Image 1 (tube, rainbow, N blue to C red):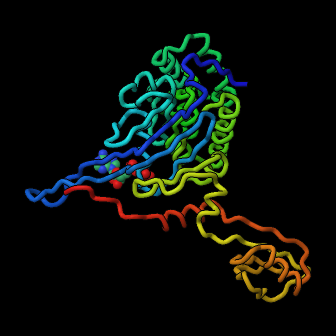
Image 2 (image 1 turned 90 degrees about the horizontal axis):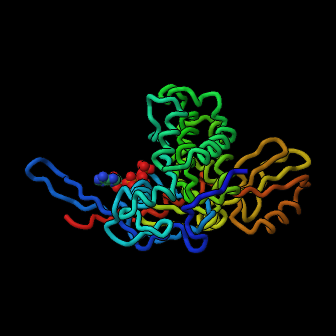
Image 3 (image 1 turned 60 degrees about the vertical axis):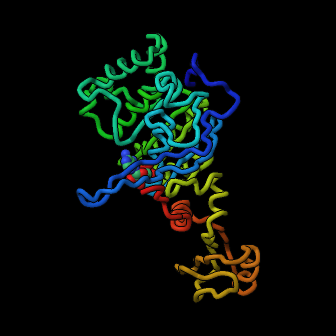
Length: 335
Ligand SMILES: Nc1ncnc2c1ncn2[C@@H]1O[C@H](COP(=O)(O)OP(=O)(O)OP(=O)(O)O)[C@@H](O)[C@H]1O
């Protein structure tokens, strides 16, 4: 069981993140020298959402959609140009230091660890930064060492760690002060299947046992399927979807597939309301355009069916359909 003491824990009631009409513009210089014009780009535009304590929320979007800009506003690195955001009851850009005690942040592409120090010493420095009492630090480090299997490389300099080991070290550094919110930007990027799985299972565990809220951006939809109760999709700076995974599947018109196992191989099934897309011996795959019950009835009328499975479209198919469909032009606000 992971210890749950956190003297700075956010109030249990009310959202842990609340963004209202959140926006961030950047000014870009464009064109040839001497004829440069300044253009304002809306990286994030009118984004409103709340995250409740204990949720695991995926924040998805294609490259350049505005995910990092949003994350930077939530962690206080960037100030919004419009709207408001509150995290653990604080305005991030005004209370960055105080907020740091409530949140843990991991950017998959960067490390917060000291490159030349052994991991253990790097984590001790983190303890001083967050002013965690020595006994509490020792207790939490022991728990995290066990869960993330840090033992074999705790005394190895960070620069010699593999990407997966370093990521486990970064997660530990982000969690030693027992934050109530963990913000993760691409935490599994570049990792092999086993390391990804270790990290996903660990995140599920700290969410279940500590109640840690997790907001995660990722291009790896395996992370989303394994971890997220809810996803928000941002595209061209605007929130294009906010809801559960099954709702996402229902929103985007991607056909479900009926897998039919027949008593014996037959030519491609032709049936109203479906299209056969694959045949392998006695098994056929039918893309559904109609109510599955009706299609099943029609198939069973003409064929000897041994087994049937209805497959939801995989999340990869759904999300790419959503990226293609919800793409209003990013507004150039001024020139
Ligand atoms: N400092 C900056 N100055 C000017 N434009 C910027 C700046 N940072 C980001 N942008 C622009 O804002 C938009 C959103 O960028 P952002 O990095 O937030 O997207 P992202 O969803 O995190 O993308 P990725 O998945 O590629 O990391 C992009 O058009 C990007 O070029």
